[in-house]
Length: 129
Image (tube, rainbow, N blue to C red; front, side):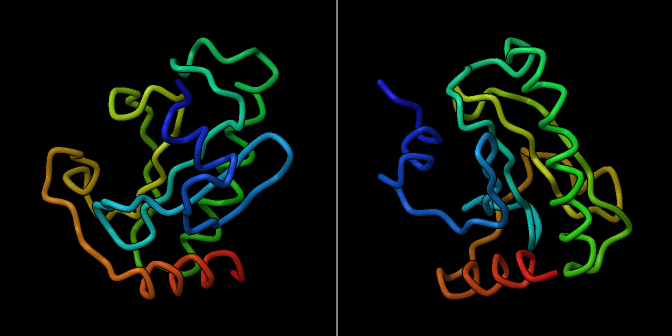
C-alpha cells in the first residue's frame, strides 16, 4: 500500500506545495510546530532515510537548502532547523522547522492548527520568496 506521502506525490491527497522538481517535493506540514514547518520528501517511496539511493541522498539536502532559505525569508526565526526522524510516516522525509531555540524542534510539543486558507497563504509566500 502506498504511503501517505506517495499519495500526496500522486495528487491523490492535496497538500500545500512549497517547491517541487522531478525528484523531490516540499510541502507544509499539516500539524506544524511553527508557521512554515515544511516537509521535504523524495518522490520515490523509500521508508528509511538512509536507505535512499546515494544519488538521491546526496541531492535531497541541496533541494532542502533552497527551501530553507525561502522559509527564512518569510518566517521570523533565528534559523531553520532540520530533523530526520522517520517514525511518523513510512516514507523518507526531512523536517524544516523555523526555530529560535532547540525547544522549537521538539516534535512531542503540541502542534499548531491553521485554516486551509492560512496554509495556502504561507505556502504561497514561501514559494514566492
